[in-house]
Amino acid sequence: ERGVQWIVESGPATRPQPPKPVGTATEASAFKAVEKVLQVRRRGTLVFARPTTAGVDQLEKFLKTYPKSAHRQEALYLRGLSLWMLKRYDHAAAAYRVLLDAFPKGKHTRMARIREAGALLFSDQPQPALDRLDELMTDYPDRPEMYGRERAHALVLVGRQKEAREFMDHVESQMLAAGKDRLVPRMRMQFAPLRMVGRPLKAFQVARHGADGQIDSSSLKGQVVLVDFWATWCRPCVAELPHLRAAHEKFAEQGFQIVSISLDEKQELLDAFISREKMNWLHHFDGKKWKNELAVLFDVHSIPMNLLVDRQGIVRAANLRGTAVARRVEELLKTPAAAPKK
Image 1 (cartoon, one colour):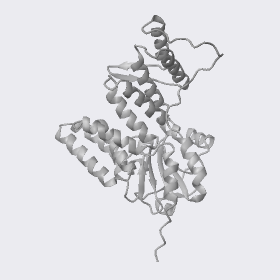
Image 2 (spheres, helix red, strand yellow):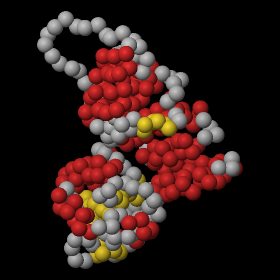
Image 3 (spheres, helix red, strand yellow):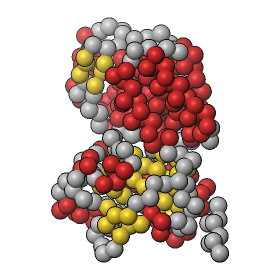
Image 4 (cartoon, one colour):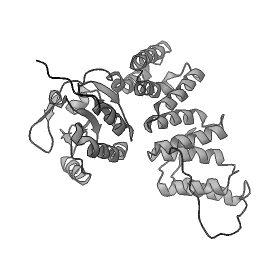
């Protein structure tokens, strides 16, 4: 069941205590303590944090103890932000929705709307995400740089690839016409993986790391393959590993393969990590970081980045997160491999 499972404090069966009054020194100090635990920093309207599970627990306790706090809007935003940063995307989406329902015109509204849509995307809820992004496009028709990447991604995930390409073309043209030239290269980099969907995987042949032989894209046909760009120093990449490992363990014998391309520099650290995390699939590593042969071929400028390829060698999805990997792999495995040419 999706949604945030709010923390409930348990204790002796005593008479319930009334909520603490609003605006007290105790309330203010309690909120400051929460901010300290979450390592909150502010720069203008931007909010940064380094959340932990313990910090989120303390934040939940604050929200329960002071339901009418003068800091409630900020606390609700911090909850969404913290859950987002902890990669608990389904909970983050629900948390942002609580904030938006309570403060529909608050100071964090625009960012919360974008993050809610992103959290829905990353928790395998592309249609609700697209609905939210369509609303953003209606409200901010002249600001496609705000939501362009997420909306294109949502269109791809719901199978509207032609519309996604048209939308990406429109966004780039609109930004150029509006004099936002300096933002266009970054937007194009974000669109690049999405433009590969529906097209054959680019051909490659590279050395296999940790074993003899080559990884040849042509030899992967007949399998469902996840081409995954990552690094040990990339926290979001590491956060995705349990999902990749679970999918591989479940579907490897049915024809699912992972090709991980590491953008690390130090082989000994990589080897230890692969062994410790039981990443028992194909790996490529050349120590060149962003100049890795395949990173250059696939125009990779940020990680994690992945491409899911069907048995015929066609890219069917990009930048999947969480349980969406296993779900899409299972779907593609049901499609038989193409018969060999005579």
